[in-house]
Length: 160
Image 1: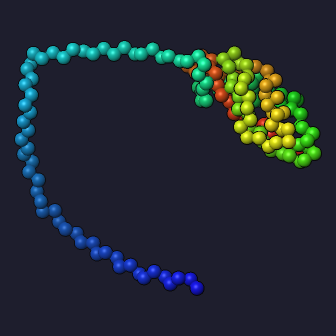
Image 2: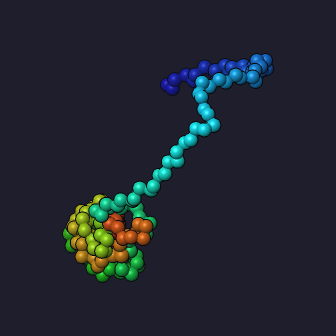
């Protein structure tokens, strides 16, 4: 049987008590600091520190994202033309999305291609191969200068 319901709680009674304590407005402040009118404070000049950017630094977020040749529609056309569905995955009926991580260098070349999330059946290897053989991208830009950028792209495998 279910446990019995908890006993009803008594609500506390709220009483309003008027403020009767008055605060004195007069406060005496005495600083033991001897400041003369002739005291001169020197101006501190702070020059901006030069911004040092490491050449090998890889950005995850940049002001201008890298673009494949022809934009994303060009990228999709490249994938549909060059991506071969692995026969093992086709036989086993494997479908899904492989997420690939890679670095786009300042010259637009692609390196360090890795699978972030795979589906197996040879699809992971095919996705890595297609990204490695991709044409050069337009590099990502930070403050108007091309920088190395890490990209994460999904590549979808779907049986027709």
